[in-house]
Length: 129
Image (tube, rainbow, N blue to C red; front, top):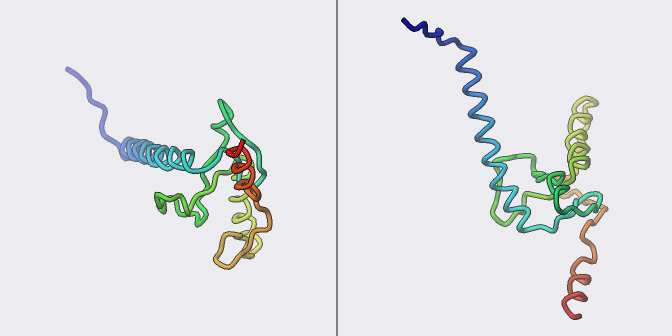
């Protein structure tokens, strides 16, 4: 006689959370792979370059903070290192704490740092060699 463990709500919750985690990882893998094909492997904030095993430290940041908004042209993404990504999301938390609007990716907001400024000229000069 086998004793079957009764199905509890916590088992269902664990199964649900595990499935949600798998689903998120699959979705992330898809847009991460796309972003790594589209963009240079450079953090758009600090300018650090990544390759090899360090590439795992480069993350995809959704500019509008909506992880379901993944246009195939990558217009809602930027590659950020894990440190800059953490800082980006901390700004929102800090702003909520202090009751301030801190997002820098709102329409009409201008970023002063241009991580890829001059990249086209550099690529062109390498191509001409």
